[in-house]
Length: 315
Image (cartoon, rainbow, N blue to C red):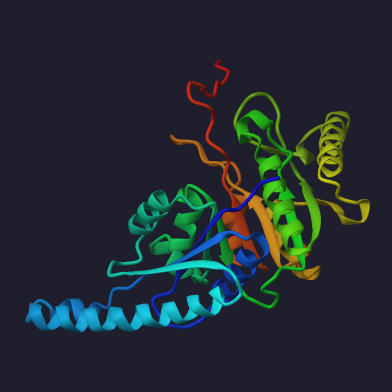
């Protein structure tokens, strides 16, 4: 079973306890991991004032950072009273994708926890929100928290993708279930398993097609193969029949309503990106994030062993 040893909470610049604080505390307490809380703080008004009076700005900035550090340490002391290992840091830098990724790379967490923020369609048309960028580029598992209704999750849904060859997704389904089962066991939560039967992997092209476009016998064979793989995974992770779910439809259109209807606290799903012009596998995560029905746990595949490469058939 996967073990979470280091959890990184990306705190907001505002000195307020958010749902991500509550969830990070609950997961840290349940898993026994070390929790590190970092806040990226940068007040634009102080930065502009520094252009006129550098010394005054430096003094004001340090006072502001000291207040933020003191507040964050107060939260940490509260956690430590419960026996948790907690460290904190406040940095005077913008909360940009580059700065976040550099920090994650240096800290080497097993899980990054962050509040998610709804971005209107108009905003997304002109720039890609930070949460969407993290989905693609964060090198480790990412937990985007929408609410803290149950800080310690009671129901977890693992959504797997049986529409691609495992060699293309680097064993991602097992990794999704490794993380989901670890969280469920640590928190005493009920673990459910979901597969959406709509897209099918045919030939060796890195794409999926609607099963409705296939003849009946071919479609039935594909669905039988997916059901067999589904049963194997459910048995491997000891998921009872009453917690196994199969749906028909376009993944991102059915996963959200199903998750909301059944009041899951965490939806665990994966993403796989390949360099080059090809679309990434697992873009369901990005589509679901648009109207997240609950907190999302995004699983990133382990890097392939050194010296291996992915082959694609030609012609």
